[in-house]
Image 1 (cartoon, rainbow, N blue to C red):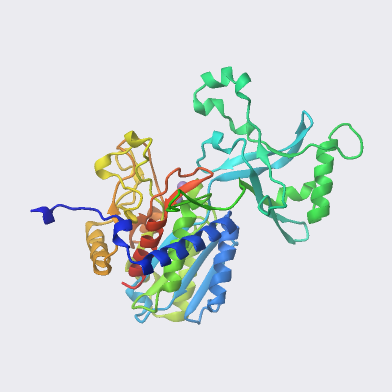
Image 2: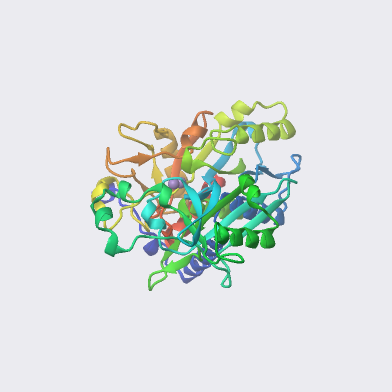
Length: 452
Ligand code: MN
Ligand code: MN
């Protein structure tokens, strides 16, 4: 009877050969380098475009390997399959945006001999996690003449960093009595950027020196900050965590963990029956709205252009309706210190492979995209055929909260889509944690899907 009961499989005891462990370590190091280098959606898309170009992807829609990017923030990569497009795609989608602090439009001011940059946070953050830690600024400033000036300060050893100041415990009596949401307010997330006055002491002389330094480094003036996208992110590199180096720590793993896993799987995949598609979105963390989010028409238009070039007699709607897709986004596995927010019978564990969420949403499945039982069955068969560990879970207890992904925005086309991605602990924090073994299994799972 024992074989009738379901047992999830631990990736660490599944992948034991030295060959596999060497591959696992190499992949993890590559992933950490990617995470250290790509801290914004623009940097991630630029990295992907560069990598794709190196292996022959181009914007030539008549070629077999096509790359279509949008506003430097979203991307579609397509590899032609043996079957016509009208038989559907094998599509994996992930998002490249991550929670951070955006500079306000009028960011620069000074108070009490410190020049500060005002911010408006982006995405779901716990504000206190952004205080009293080294921060970097990444992004672009676009000058009136249209020139795009890239900015990245705080990553090189010789760079200065920035920081949001925190209140000393000695004077925090009132703050300690507040609920967390009230104790840390968005308007206090100001980034220290200078202290020395220009020339002599006086009104606004500290911010004057900051402006002078910005001008000499980037040729910009204060008005140029109106046409800038500057993001404050945690400074420093992604690292191995733990004496056994089994955990991967770094900023932005939701969802660059899936971007990387899907990209690696896509690049490793041979030409297969169905056309393989990788779609990377922006704005998922704030509801997928706008021109570069999953609710936009970008993917639809890109695929329509492709159908026009490759198969003008086929209908895009049929291509989409016959598509099988993965919403590759990270999952919240059991947190060892906060197990009470999970239903342990339906929670994922770090190290047990990528996690299916048959549905997302919250409270009564509100706002959910739900995969059909038929699709889950099809997928189980694919993974069983390749002997890849995976798990099935629901994020958190019923009524504890919840969340959505881009799955629902793609499900509207009638494609079969399911959320499937590795677990991340400390999600949305400046230092998210994933499992080296899960990354390895996830790449294998996505690869099996692309070749299905
Ligand atoms: Mn996500
Ligand atoms: Mn998220």
